[in-house]
Image (cartoon, rainbow, N blue to C red):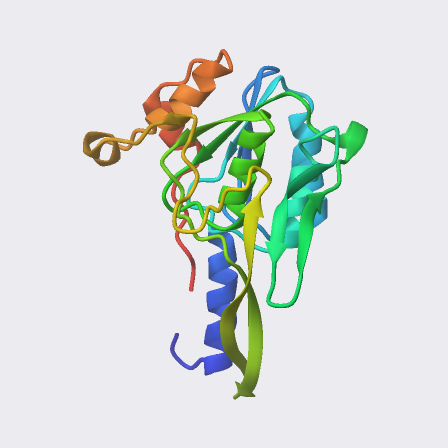
Length: 237
């Protein structure tokens, strides 16, 4: 960016990335809403708005493909929006303590309809923990590819600032054992239905996974139509 300072370039970069991470949703009819959630970390008001919209529909497809995760608090908040009871996610172990990781239900404000979750090999951290929780609780059908297996809980440690640009390091501080005693680290979540796009699907811009999920909700969407619902958004710099 000609004439820009390093700080200005960094700010533009951050703004551009959040264009990519913007949450998007499509309400097709009374039967189905599709919600693409590319990252954990949205304001709670935004998540609450999408969940309120989802309650108007029989089925919600929550697309967590390519979602790299986010904060533990955001994970618990999202889980609480999909259960009519409190949920124990598992046990979180740090160097000096072990404590349960729990999510509090939003009660009557939670979405209690049919839930279908989409994941792939880039679904990591909070995204794959969420997918495993709804599996273990028999709350949802998970469709797609095996997830990344990267669920260590990390903390960003600030180390300083140069030219008004903060810098630091990210360090794993805790591990998580799921409620069934399993550890997803290095293993990931195996979907209830394993389904991957073929090379031809990718070349021809088809999304057979979203199409198949919609059929489970009683809505017919071709793979070509599914691929056009959430077109790729490129960052602006």
